[in-house]
Image 1 (cartoon, rainbow, N blue to C red):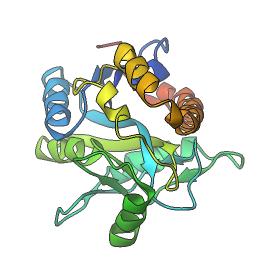
Image 2: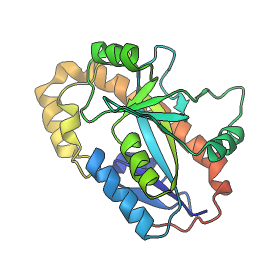
Image 3: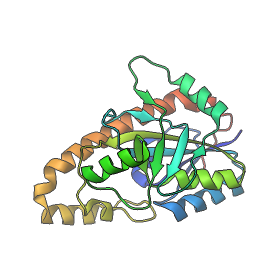
Image 4: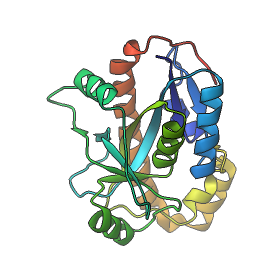
Length: 230
């Protein structure tokens, strides 16, 4: 059992930066980058993959910082869901049992386009029943299934179903996953009225980061091979 963690962005990589012995690949955003990351992991001999990072909430029950480790992953407008490795899922969930820790195992939805508006999130929730969304897990799961690799997704909520994301914010992250601070500052100067939304998003990322670091601290000792690979 050789475990590799795949994150989409450098900001998500920073969440677990400094934790010795974690195998980590920064994939970039979206379906094609996700598949390439699995190819890379397979070429390096990894057998178990975790799609790791933040997610947007679709269910009104989920708060910022809540963790979702879904049993099934859906792709938007895809016919079939993909189930995660059930035995591995049970093992990881058991390691995280804590009365003060909110953990959800309901379905996750992966989309190809950024979802910005609360109305979009509500529609997706009613249409699919999935509790949260990202842009990578389903595509990573598909690639893992083709290669007979075990797969899990571990996500923490950074923006809830009611939060609006400024339309320019996703443009500040390159497709390779690199955050562009100069572009962020430029856009913020042009859109100062978005400061309230940005403060809320920043708070959500902080809470998601805290939860994900807790998750890693609880589960990484169960990984037999923890040599760092970037």
